[in-house]
Length: 206
Picture 1 (cartoon, helix red, strand yellow):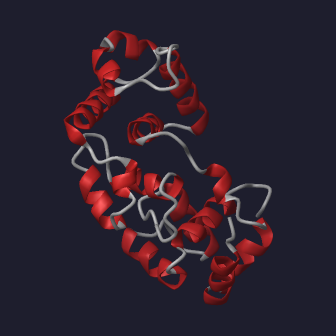
Picture 2 (cartoon, one colour):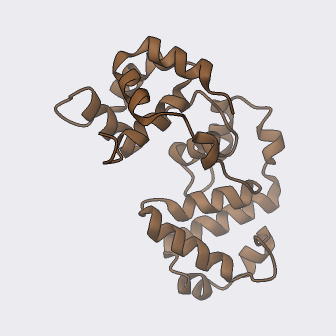
Picture 3 (cartoon, one colour):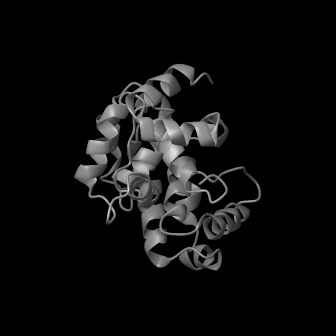
């Protein structure tokens, strides 16, 4: 993946972000891209909500182990899985509701990833947020890590807000509106900027 045009634009547009880019080095966003269909991708996103990466990965692994015959269960298999079995994998009751609502929505006719790829970002957000447990942040993670959209700025993301507060020496975490303000110069490469903001939080870099 060639990010050179995006990086050149970002470095010219924002000297502070340019410093981050120089310290972090090459953009490796492509190494974080996910695979799987829409059901698999959104299931993982739900399981990862409000958990540390390590805890979420363990629960996701145990969830997949419930279906040893397939890389990922179908919507029907998820609906037919007893709640107690899902609880045994460490999935909370609220997330079980979310997962089963997602599976039911897929059965009822949710667009495929291929169909979503023909839509603009905001249309995708509005298509998916009616599903229980799917908010704007979750859809934005799909846009970034599965659909490879290059101009997504997750204003609700704590990491993004923490990085902006730190880099721009703000007295407190910025509001969504302020995140949008700082992100304006990064268009149309706000996804790439977001990746560098996340990386700036790594202790070894700053």
